[in-house]
Image (cartoon, rainbow, N blue to C red):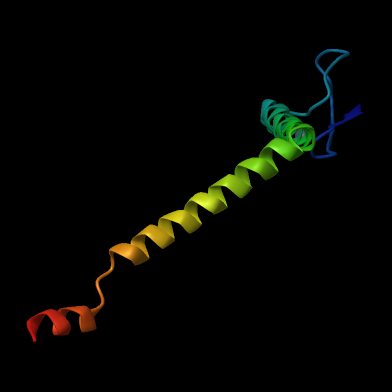
Length: 86
Ligand SMILES: [Zn+2]
């Protein structure tokens, strides 16, 4: 008898290398492993490109500010209209 590495249930292994009681557990364990790896890689990527990401975020913020400013400029104040009408 062997213990499933995913659910901990005891099972009769078909082969010496069997680690899971069922295909389902094997699939789930595989998916979890991938997820963990992705998380790890993402973390490593963020760590490696910290400055690049910070720079990118800073630029994006700047752009948003500029956009907000340009929008304000376009906005017409109602009192300006009144002045023209008189
Ligand atoms: Zn299992």
